[in-house]
Image (cartoon, rainbow, N blue to C red):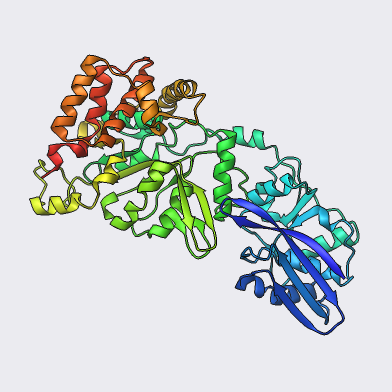
Length: 511
């Protein structure tokens, strides 16, 4: 008897429905699994055999042929255990299978018949709804994630016996229903860190505010203990809240990477990723034999923080250059190409010298050669892609001992939101969300300068020997400063402030 049962395969951050055809006949004995399965799927026969035996069923001693269609698409992982097992039972007439075609069934089996959680549940559920399936049956740990998708029945099970009884005896499984919008609104402003905890550093806070308002990349340069990491960790708290669409995009990526917890249904705050400097280029941008999203994709719609940026391998930093421009990363293999979104705000930090102090500080013991070698770890093209370079000075004792609290993140966030609303209105007819995304055409249209501003930026270009890309970055940052002030035109003091945020382009650093 032939039975068709449905599962799903993850391809990038999307899913594709897989038809699992199970045929059982009496013409011999054997177990044949075809359709480009990987080793984890090939080994499923052992898990399925033990699981069925432990719940009172068995794999029949007949010829079993299992085809996973489309046959030219590589399938991977143990998530097909449950669907294959139910297919074998239905095809061998051990259970009824009248409405089995109405459900997508996925789950990894343990030897006792219990189910383990799987990856990529959200895109699987979205695809199931789009293709008109009535429902989806999953391990109970994954149900909150799948329940985000409306117009789809989501059933969570702890053991394969529950699925068997559901089809064979009509025994109901409790349906999981989630109010996505309510849960999203409850947690959208849940931040563990606040800018009011940062002592001093008003200039750096202002730079952070501009970076958040325009989505600009920023690098903090300062001695150890000056508060660079402390400032960076508080950036998500002043960014605009995720929209429901952005939350779904972000959740899909984390779902595919297996980063969603059993109690988590939807990403409600912008991600903050801080990889260690020993990270490989594949772990950062994504890839591998079976491509997975990297840290830059996990930071999509959020913040990627690179602490002590010069300590990262140069090859790792250089692979970020293209994603920083295109806001997506393309992983190409001989048989397929996968695109992962990577629209993130880069926040980086570094010491000003190998000794950790500025070149003109008394504590600086680095030679000119050591300084040059240290600075050369960051290439010019990469620094060009970072809009704001800000020097973070040592915090003095008087500032540390001061009892007065600094400005709260919520107050800064209000100003950022007002600036973002201005940008949304300005770019409403374009596929642009904030100033950092604008290109040459938009710069020409929205960043016009008066005579004083033109003269000022001309002097800066000549004195600092700035590149054309740095010129564009200055205009974008100036546009954001003007938006925060609520002025329609860019004025000379906006240009002056934006030029001050190009520290690493100054002769001061070219030692």
